[in-house]
Length: 339
Image (tube, rainbow, N blue to C red; front, top):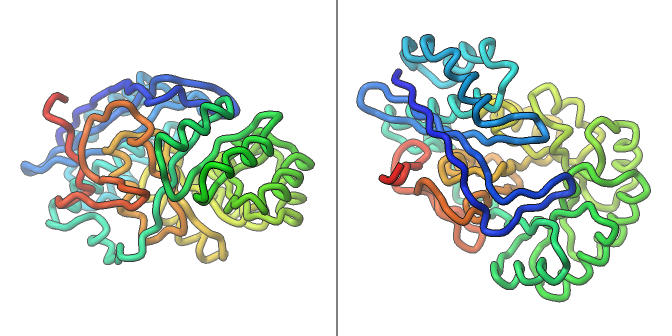
């Protein structure tokens, strides 16, 4: 296979703030794999929380360029198994290659990716739209600027209940809350009780990932469902989260791509847990790949392209929360001609 890497730094529509940090630009890396005249695209993102940068991603992949370019793709799963020992310390890099391999494989079969798995997309969940931490006034402005049926609200301030109370005055949309590890046990239970009457559907990662004792207490007492994010990174974490969370949020970048994500989905469902996939602010390249997992999912957060002021590709479209697949085989993503 021929390998090409494309680094990007895309501006956000608004400064994007969560409990840990703010940023105005999202660095991304697109990987392209070509074989027999066909091309597959995959994407991954940098992330300060996991100490991942685009230069590190490129270095990790380029270290195995010789093997990749000598490899002849059979199935993406077989390719993932070959690459995992080489990139097990950088699953973000493995994700880009795995997505590209899935795109290429589906194109070779002349099918959309979800068709390769014999999935029915007729009951796909809608995606939420994220409102980052800001002044209440600005958060209200963002609601009005982007009317949407489901919002994910980033929290982790001393005024979280007041924020949700005020936002509720301006929309009847479903709210999901993401604290990004910012709360403790008492704060989580207090907030959950208040949010129950304010139209909040569930709370994502309320407490630090390492606080399993605290999460057990919260899980047993919370009136709202709790979803793991930072506590659920790789396949082995799914079993760990059972009995501590009601559901898991799978990020393709963190777990190493579609190949392990599908196994995580099936394991979570076996355990009776709800499943969603999340965004790492990917462009339409990575978001188009996520879209093909929708028939498996209970919820999805795939609003990356909506949060960005610019995009590098077309593919999946998102209208009022509804995901529309591109009329192309594979994931449907194609880089704009300028790139």
